[in-house]
Image 1 (tube, rainbow, N blue to C red):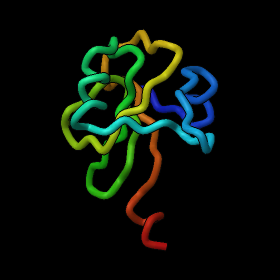
Image 2: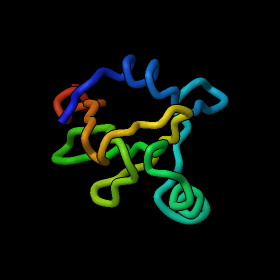
Image 3: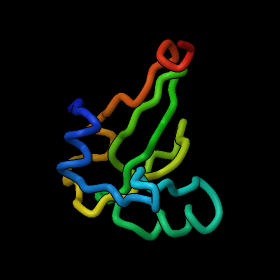
Image 4: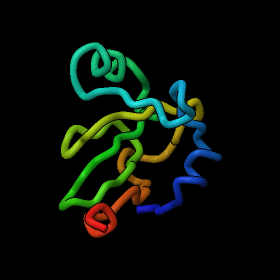
Length: 94
């Protein structure tokens, strides 16, 4: 598994941004999920939580998912081969 920083992710893959300049979130249900399911997984990333720790992984992951992020640049690696730590349970409890 390849690990990278959020800054590297943003520079390399260019995620879509919302009106506030943050990553645009796509929900895991309804119209958002329908939209995500039509996209090539190379452009989709999933924010997941496992044991209180948040990660961003490439591809449309179905387990432990919180929301999806869509990028303008593709990731041509196998799904779930890049992992970016977003938070830990300890950091959230401070």
